[in-house]
Amino acid sequence: MTRRARALLGTFFEISLEAESQSIANAAIDAGFAEASRLERMLSFFNPESEVSRLNAFGHRQAQIVSPELLELLRFCVELSRQSGNLFDVTVSENSKSTSECIVIEGNTVGFKETAKVNLGGIAKGFIVDRVTDTLLKGEVSDIIVNAGGDLKISRSSGIPVGIRDPREPTRCAEAITIASGAVSTSAPYFSFSKLIDPRTGACVDTLRSVSVIANSCMVADGLTKVVGLEASDTFSILPILKSHGASALVLSSDTNDEKSREFYG
Amino acid sequence: MSRTRPLFWFSTLPALALHAPFAYAAHYLDIDEAQRLLFPNAEQFTVVNTATESAGNPPLRIWKATGKTGLIGYFVVDEVIGKHEYITYSVALSAHGVVQRIEILEYRETKGWQVANQAWREQFKHKTARDKLEVGEDISNISGATLSCKHVTEGVRKILSFYESQLKVSA
Image 1 (cartoon, each protein chain N blue to C red):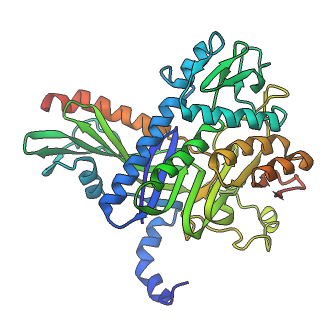
Image 2 (image 1 turned 120 degrees about the horizontal axis):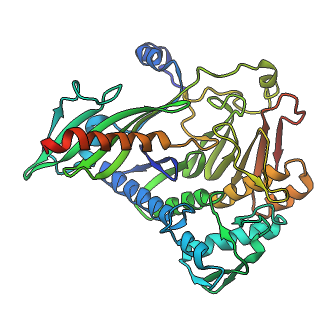
Image 3 (image 1 turned 180 degrees about the horizontal axis):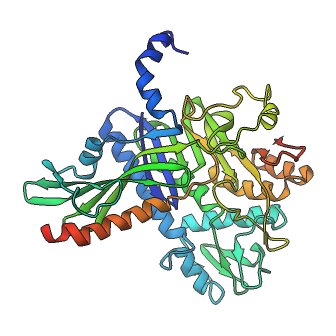
């Protein structure tokens, strides 16, 4: 097995795989990292030269032709927003009143109905993990694991345990899920302050929960962690959304007073 | 798991002792592997003496990479400490001090600050196949909140300023 890591997407981006020779493995891994940094440059909210920044600067004046990658990602964002009653929301605006409903997608163009911007920080990492895995699958390699600081995708012939960090003691694992093929994404505030904003209140979510979603696609898993994180007390609304994506969720609370310290949905 | 477990334990005792304070560790590349990967055309790597210079603590380890045409660039190894993690990484600089590539060599997490909470832990008993696994023993993949790589970014900045002040003149 060849395993390598780089500092990408603001985190540690790791690729491991099997190949017949070291040179095949190295070439595949380099192609994977190259794809990750290409997509990072395209989707970054903070890079003024990114495609997302161009859309944010001009999208409200005129619909912009966007790349197939950004189009696919924005289509899913709009779908998940609609499905979750705007709990998942990639738009940002000065008065925080915009919702994903202001995103207009027509053909290969995207525009905004009002002055708004999109920040894909809550989902781009999962999307990039999927795309990097697809890139690797084109090569003569097998048993692929792509892990972008906790958002991971596995494409293997046999199952492998994935540890879920314990929100009380993040340097230990609370449990392990065995996966041969699929994705896991975890959203939790233990390494930084919560950056999850509740679009209903505009305030940061003050929760000590760890939300992991298991799905086929890492983009889906990444996006759903935000929905489950906001609605973890409302099983009725979460279950149909998870089910429609073939996903399941594991919610761990780090609050000892919380009666529901471990919940599994799906 | 392994039939040769007693032997396995015996032979890995020093390694275990060395890694005892770390909850999770991943080794990606040895220094010589990274040198070959980052400078495939280099024929020789010569140690640059950084002991007397302001190379930080621990000091930067620097090699000159030379090939048929002379100096190709510099191979730098540095360590940074995050809030919970120790990272050893390498940087390939061109002869003109431009970053060509950064590779993580080793990643280790500390667990010294963990809070033991037996009551909370009890709740997991019998609920999972592998309750309360120690990270690093046989779990090599973890899903969790994202760790920032900003210490590596800061480290690279430090390396570039070292190049400007100490290496550029000798290049």
